[in-house]
Every structure is written in C-alpha cells, then in structure tokens.
Length: 214
Image (cartoon, rainbow, N blue to C red):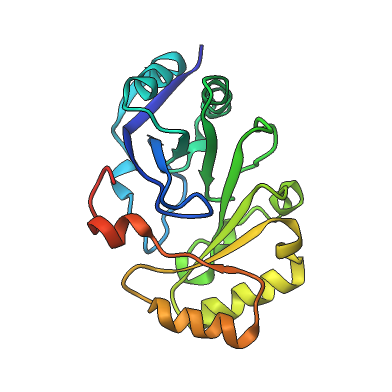
C-alpha cells in the first residue's frame, strides 16, 4: 500500500468553490514543485508525517462526521499515492474533491472525484508551469480556479476563459489574491464584461483569518 507524506488532517468548512460552507475533512499532503508568490500554505512545502493510505483514511473517519473530503496541499499529485487515497476516500462514502495546481497531469483520477484545478496567472510567478493539456480532461463536475492579483491578471484570465471556452467545460472561478486585489473591484470587472464565471471568496479566511488548520 502506498505511503504518503501528510502535513495535516482536519475538519472545517470548505472555504472555496461550489461546496463552500460544507463541513469537510481536509487532508493536506506535503510538498509542492511550485512556488507561487502569494502562496498561503508554504508550511506544507516540507516536513509532515509519513502515513499509509489506510492510516490516512482511518484518521479521516475518526474525526466528527462530514459528508465531504478534500485532498489538498502543497500539490497532492506530486505524491504517487494520491490517486489511491482519492479512490479509498470515495469508497469510504465521502464526496471527494482534489485541489491541484494544474501543473501535473490530472489523468487517471477516479471519475468519482471532483477536480478543482488552479490555473496559474502571471501574477503568481508560475504561469509557465500550467499544463494546458489538462483542460481537455476537465468534465462538467470539475472546477477551474484562477487567482488574480491585479487588472493584468484579470485580462489574462478573461482571454483564457474566452479562447478555451472554459465555461463550456466546467465551472470557472475567479478569486482575488488575499490582500492584493479588492473583491468588489473584481466583481465590477466581471459584471462589466458579463464574463461567464463565478466570483470566489475564501470563506475560511473571512471567518477565521489566516489560521492554519482552517
């Protein structure tokens, strides 16, 4: 059975995407090949605890009940055992989501899993790492997130959404980078362009601030 390096396992409310507000168990895997300028989970770049997939699932099940489980990071797909963990959590009855940077291949993921893929904008400093072939693997149940730092990022995102017809593939989420772009400003840009996307705010930060394990 695969071994995983795990930074933390905790229960909270989902803060992002279409499931925002839903009680969820989070499994944060350790390690990431990217270094986004605004990263808020740099503590997951190293360290953590080595656990078997079975031990992770048991740790998830030991927490108070929640209908959903989210595997996040770091970059979860950087660990070979991630796909096995996703399937095991589905087998355990959870509505499972995967938060991934989109820099690694999303092929071969259990079809029961909702993929939430983060396309990196120029403001992240990592847009050159986007694996554009992943767009062809997205399904209607999946979500694409773009975190924006400024107007230039917005215009880049708008062009990507239109050129790739992302809204026809899955749900598209535009999010302001925390502390860098005002949410109301982004909302006005979206409305002015009638862009077929959803505005995303980080609910967990609005509730608790930048607190680890939330």
